[in-house]
Length: 170
Image (tube, rainbow, N blue to C red; front, side, top):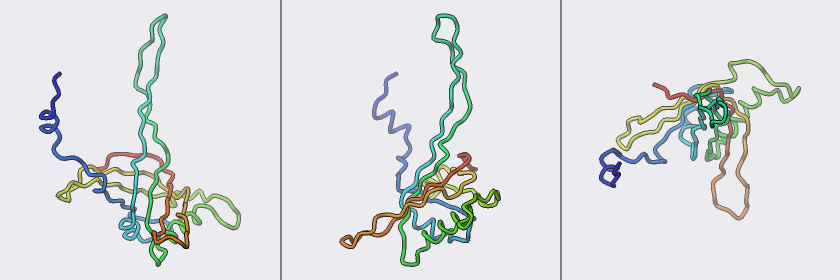
């Protein structure tokens, strides 16, 4: 098969830009501001999805592979820029405190402490190219950026969520 740059340009409508994305957590557990979270998202990832393979050996052959189950990395990482209103730290700390009782140290098994989130990749015209649904998230790790008296950089927070699944949403 002859693949030239003309073939690529004829097949690739427009390059998806990495900065054209938005995050939506419609129901922030603990009462955080969904709009502030969306606006202040600096970096995001789409959780890795792996489709396993089952190898069935046969005599002296290398065997044959059959499709296995879907596996995902049950972590979803985001980075946020903080404002003087502390909306990010407050939202995710309150969510984390709802999941684990700070007095007893026990986890709260209430399923309402999990929610779904969406990652939308947008086209340059503003329409949605693809929408991922991150199913069953809750705050796992809240890591603030470094505080430095000599720096003029903004404060950022890295948040790792635990998640149950990743699907392409309609």
